[in-house]
Image 1 (cartoon, rainbow, N blue to C red):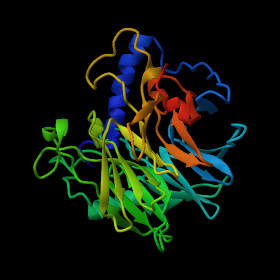
Image 2 (image 1 turned 90 degrees about the vertical axis):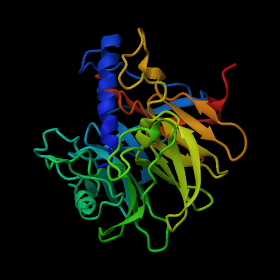
Image 3 (image 1 turned 90 degrees about the horizontal axis):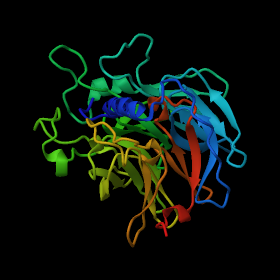
Image 4 (image 1 turned 60 degrees about the vertical axis):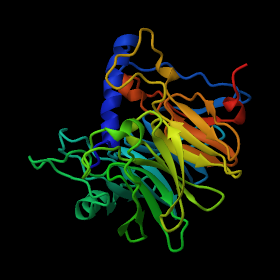
Length: 373
């Protein structure tokens, strides 16, 4: 629904892909070369590859869980061997996943306005057991139509949606008392609580951003300007607070991480990111943010000759004290702190470049954030 939703971001990726494929002469459908696996001592280690559109990473059944958006799969990855196993198939744009009580709760997205909706279910939170068929658990599109948490205009004069009504991107177990699940809905521009019965209520709607280039950006707000926050990632910190990454219309430097308490009140805002799609926090309180499109050409400009798509994207390390540092990870999306290590999905939008099976899961150690000698 917001004018700068995650679906709008997908349109930009497609435009970027068109330019990149022309520059790189990569034909659509060409299989990407197999990834070279760095040695364990190297700063960035490829744990699993051959994935398609890996978005959120989570844990369950003693494995990493990966939402493969472009393949319609939820895949388990053995963190030691990298072996993969498909747990759920035939999903429509799965982008987030969490395991609770042996069941998988899966955020499925929405098609872009104007595309053929035939056969596409409404976006929502699905539930399935491994090997089983997914069913609707919480209809997020219906909730958005009935409640419209950010209060923006949903439909144009022709009766068609102005943008995505709902496009959930991340699912997290809710640690609050009597909590069950939290969902970052990028299309609805809000973070939702979902209880054990599938009942939905609004929890946190980030404010419209009106600084920098967002000052004059057109939007379907009452003022007509500003950038929607577009929440895309969720993580708890050691302080018990919830960290919410926000894409913020992909405006360079305007991405945010909102730190909120159990009541949905903003405690702190960490600014200065570009296209953040994931967030993780270690036990020291260090915040990690994935910038999916950092270093990509401007939205309406062709890439320069010889442009290398592997240079797009980075992870930002934000310590409690001291300067930020950066690790170059290609097109990172979901981040996860697991067993004291930072994990990331990579090459998350490679399929838009005509590169199927290029998605990866990687670990990123501290040396990756050290400046080059």
